[in-house]
Image 1 (cartoon, rainbow, N blue to C red):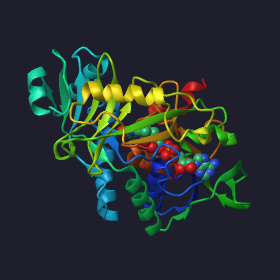
Image 2 (image 1 turned 180 degrees about the horizontal axis):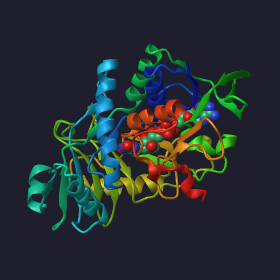
Image 3 (image 1 turned 30 degrees about the vertical axis):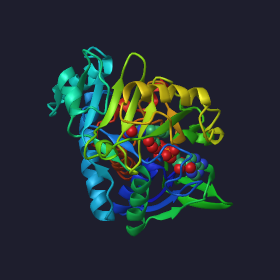
Image 4 (image 1 turned 90 degrees about the vertical axis):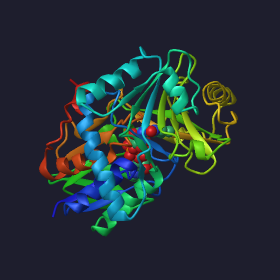
Length: 375
Ligand SMILES: Cc1cc2nc3c(=O)[nH]c(=O)nc-3n(C[C@H](O)[C@H](O)[C@H](O)COP(=O)(O)OP(=O)(O)OC[C@H]3O[C@@H](n4cnc5c(N)ncnc54)[C@H](O)[C@@H]3O)c2cc1C
């Protein structure tokens, strides 16, 4: 039986642990914190799933595989994780993201609808639409619940025989003649293969020190909806909003109170490291987010009722690093998901298990090759 250590049980490590355990590997899954914690990238109540992908049609087969695996996880864990409420990309028709979503849907032959200004205003009055703006509706989109997703994957992995080790920071990972020695809490664990899934902490692990992964801050704001039913997943799709004055992703109300937005136009500031994550936002940042809500979301009270700050690992081209770790044997790296890795995590987990157990995968991951920055 192949012994595999997974370092990090955010969504990527959790999904990889699950897929490895199902394939019969002997898995040890380490994390500094508890499953579903809120200091890294895999927490904050909601995550967008979408299939018409502005990041490129090359992702579509992976997204479709991820959707099937989310359903498999739900069935196995008896959990409700993904609600397909549809997804909107909203903005001027010539905006690059609006064009990219339309192009992806057309190239990949995906169902979609383009709503002109009047149709958009009528169907989704929760968004304020300027003259000339359009909406692209992707029916194969929805909202995921991140904390239950991570916990369901780890529960299922444990049921299949994995050993989950929360509060086990890995302080050393050293290559040996036959594999790797992983040190945590003064104990050494010998394994055949190691999967590094440390999210924004990547450069704190010596074998990953030279990878171009920067820890950055992403802030989310919740605004109370005046009519909660009209802002629930039954009535309001997830959205990517593009406007001359603001841009954000928008999530329907899951808590019976508030919708969430993640402002994009305010940028993702660098952190010295994820351990320097501030636990709230600056008044200037909050005021700018509130101004975006006041301008573009007529059904909310534009003062945040909740703020969440999270650390995420970004690469220079904002595509992940996923593949064999350059310069090492029997090591896989999975990091730098750059603000869009959650929805794909079960497919990435399947790929991580393929790489550890087969030394390759049938999924096309050439654009994610960690060597692309080292050549
Ligand atoms: C606010 C926000 C909104 C987002 N919105 C979306 C969205 O709508 N849709 C989408 O698809 N994606 C979205 N993303 C991106 C997505 O959530 C991330 O890409 C994904 O969660 C990355 O997961 P991860 O497992 O790589 O990292 P993390 O969740 O950060 O997990 C890394 C884990 O490794 C552990 N670790 C690190 N070092 C060690 C060590 N030495 N020893 C032991 N454990 C260690 C950490 O404790 C942590 O638990 C968003 C991200 C953020 C932050």
